[in-house]
Length: 542
Ligand code: ADP
Image 1 (cartoon, rainbow, N blue to C red):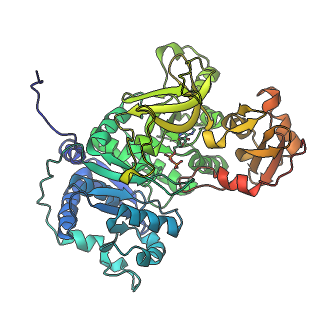
Image 2 (tube, helix red, strand yellow):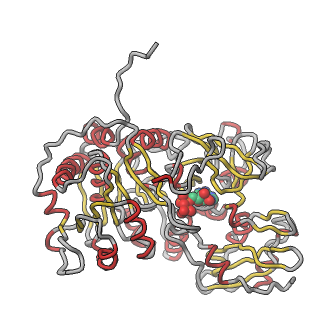
Image 3 (cartoon, rainbow, N blue to C red):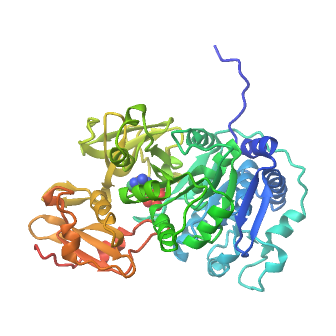
């Protein structure tokens, strides 16, 4: 017997319709690539998204075709999120930090038909235009006054001209909720990048779960500033979650330095933000140097790579900003786990609670996980046994776009490539990515733990721990440190700092100092580059 409830498909367009109807006067504020601050409301955003949907139709974009963006976080990007997916096409966000050859590979592989880009990316688009012949139309996300006199981009249009010539008389189509809605490529540190194709249904289910109090905890009373880019797994879903709850949105545009961010946090009374740890390092350094505070910010989501306990400590104790440590991946839309408390943690000491928050957390509803050994045998949840982490869920990938790489699943589970343990309460702790694990005499050493310890030293700005060749043990940990400006720190002082904080045989064999740790396209430490740089490093213990 079937249930007798209304059959309403879970569609991305329903989010902007809801936000307009019930939160129509709530603001969306953006720092624009043009340099100024733009503000309007959900009502305006919905109206312009409908005009844009008509414009896309006018450009001949068909259902299922890909529309690409090269853009910062901003209101026009948000309009594209809704107009492209809502109208039945597929929103493909490109990471502008990728090298031109990888970018053109991705555009051609995705068969993007139209490409929208921010003013800042004009030089990049001038390079890739000739490499991407299948793109029928290029659109600058600005007005006619900003259109450059370039001959390198055929038929360049301005966004404002494009939507000005269309009406907002548009009814969002009643699509099948399983239709593809957006596309995001993994960063491809090994091999070619692969596409992850989300559906309306997976996006909506991810949005519901993400808004929950033990998820990212979004509410209409929030002012949300996603620092995480809209090209990094859809800004972790925040542009959808904000519409679902009707929160005010603040978009930082290209201004990701400490001052620009802090100014926006204060002037717009931001209550919640989200980003990778390296972004917060810059912001915290600015706030500390200038002796500032966060007067409205209540919490920040930190994920994408491990949040060092030292960062949790300073945010919470010095600035009164609660840290929501989250783990996930492009293949999971991306939220997997969040480190939020259970009742039993209420009377724990601050130190114990912070240590728990240093774990990657427990799954949101809609995510299931397990750890297995190399033979695939399930390991116990005792907080000690660690192995390969596998996941499944409503918003987890089943196969890559165009089936690249064949069937990625193992018995219906997606292998994350991460190594982790899980405790009896279901809190996962990631020890490493499997490709970063250090194997010393056949035993694994977790680089994340060693980095977290180094990050607690007051002279350390950033630290990465990599495997270095050792004739007896095969690999031993080598710590690569970037010091804070003007700070003094010797190799011996750094090594002494490890005493009593980890097992003796885990202590790195050597420390090297660099000016800066190289970062990848999503702001994560590029350990592949460091391993290459130090491949001939001779350990003093060798
Ligand atoms: P890419 O590595 O290609 O940029 P993702 O952004 O999807 O792709 O990265 C997912 C990976 O990031 C995870 O598999 C995990 O290794 C790492 N990661 C994400 N969140 C955390 C976290 N909180 N702690 C440690 N590692 C994390």
